[in-house]
Image (cartoon, rainbow, N blue to C red; front, top):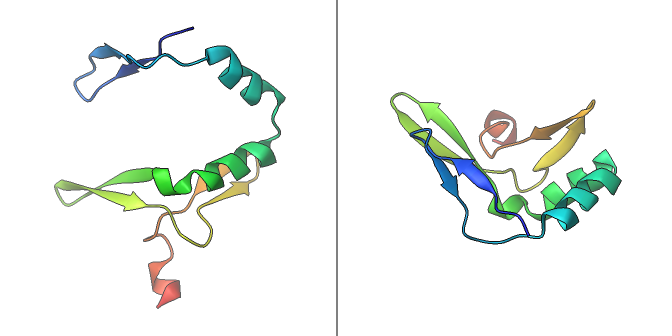
Amino acid sequence: MYYIYTINMKNTIMKNTNKINFDKVLNFYQTSTPEEICQLLNMISDRIMVPVQKDGFVDCQELDKEVPVVMNGPFYQINTEELYINEKQ
């Protein structure tokens, strides 16, 4: 088992107390195609939010309900609810 270390907003290293099986995660990453990883991101899209800074505050946006994640060349494009808000109206 490995511990995952994260850096918080004050650049302090914090140890995540939840143990994870890093080998399983690494194996999934190494053996999955980009399309499979994109599908996983779509499956967990209801657990993802994107912080966007706006006029002195941070707006935490949910992912789009119709098309939350797509492949854009070799990259994963994360679509928020506000990204295409004008087209939806």
